[in-house]
Structures are given as structure tokens and as C-alpha cells.
Length: 41
Image 1 (tube, rainbow, N blue to C red):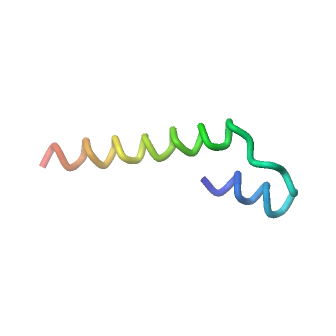
Image 2 (cartoon, helix red, strand yellow):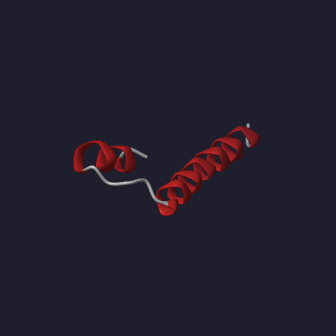
Image 3 (cartoon, rainbow, N blue to C red):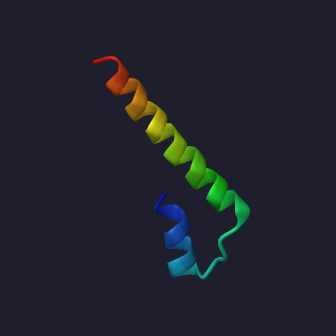
């Protein structure tokens, strides 16, 4: 999550579709993990 903004700010890269896809996968994984953990209690 910090790599894409860092590369834009430091290296001047453009945000591409794969940056957004990677962020969505990471957020989705966090949501699934939280949902799974709360379901077991």
C-alpha cells in the first residue's frame, strides 16, 4: 500500500491499472481476514 504512493512521490512514476488492482487485492485480503477473525468469536 505504501509502495505505489512512494514511487509516485519519489520517482515521479504514473499510477497504472496494476497499482489499483494490487491495492484492491490487499484491501480485500484485510477485509476477509478481519471478517473471518470476527466470525470465530
